[in-house]
Image 1 (cartoon, rainbow, N blue to C red):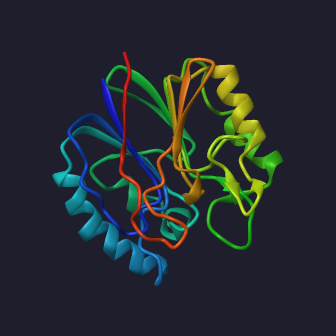
Image 2: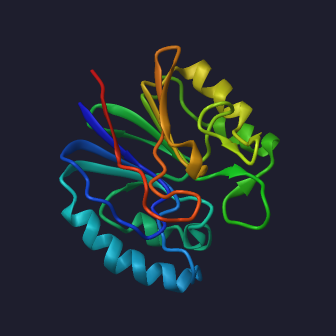
Length: 208
């Protein structure tokens, strides 16, 4: 099964190669005017058109810290033609998916929690989960910014405990990359660079 992973789009909608599942790991909406009503209009028009055109069997996504409308009115995202996950799981294409938008608290953005609160969110990940789609990186993987690792240690512990086949995330634009950990494929699929410009291609992952 072919997965294509993207994150940190910030309004830039890349060409997606044909795949069975497209995973969108948050920070979807354009920067600049981030008012919920502006994001709602963009999601229901430009983003909805993109979703309809991507050559993917199914699309699974979460919000990120720039997606304010997801925090104030998640129904906007749930009503789009995809599987939107916000601290919940779904059985899709014979696999168990879990999605969550939260990241460590930094300044005043959407979907931010303390590490103790994040640990409570990750506790909701069911055992036997095959695919994690989250906005936060786990500690030590694609999470370095300004000389500091900002990933969640409790997310890393949750990954080790559940051993998903795939975990896709973003948030740290400079952390784009792919790693293996104890049988799990970890992908920071950030599309934009530190200047919020498109820089990285979607990441394809083939899983048995």
